[in-house]
Length: 125
Image (cartoon, rainbow, N blue to C red; front, top):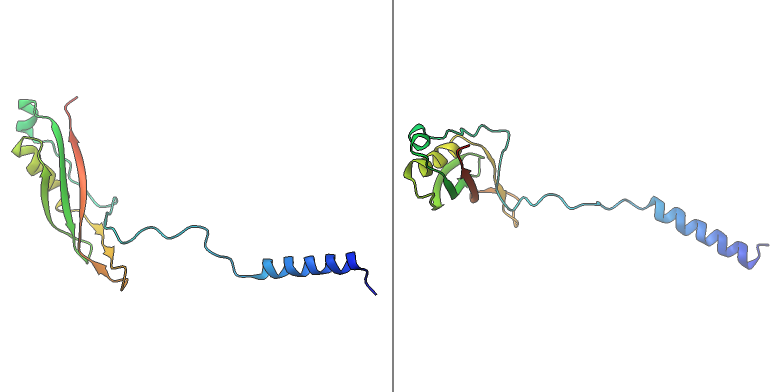
C-alpha cells in the first residue's frame, strides 16, 4: 500500500505526463494577412529621372498602390508630392510592374483588393 507522499508523487507524475501529451499550441500567431504587402522579390524599377538629376531635384514622396486580388498592382496615386512632377511620375512608374501579396478578407479568408501606402526618398549624393 502506498503512503500519502507516494500517492501525491504518483499523481504529480500522471499530471505531468498528461500535460506533456497534450497537443502543443502555436507559439506565435500567423502574420497579419488582412493587410496587402509588396512582394519584395518582384522588380522595382528604381530610376532617378535624368532631368531631375541635372536640375538637382530631391524630395520625399508618399504614395499608395492598389494590390489586386490576383497579386498585381493595378493602380497607384501620389498622396504627398515631392514638389517635382518628374519624381512623382517616377514613383508611380517604379511600382507599376511590381507584384504584391493581396490582403485576405477576415471573414472569408479570400484575397481582396486593397491599397498599400508607401514612401520613397529621392536624394542625390
